Length: 90
Image (cartoon, rainbow, N blue to C red):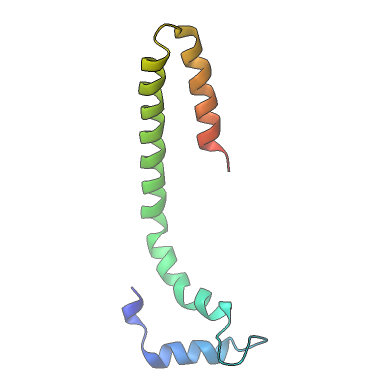
């Protein structure tokens, strides 16, 4: 993705985003400017991956809860509710 940037592109970005950064160190804005288009390309696959991980963890928690609390079936639902809350916390 970043192979598309030439040295001239990077130099132009550094000049466009000069500001109050330390001499010799480009500002964070340069990084954000250059990496922004790449991040938009991977946004959707990243969300799909997160959804897959969420579903896997949810299924794994259900399997474990059913095995560990087999003698206490009333607790399984409560435990899975807590797991769901933990997985959806931001």
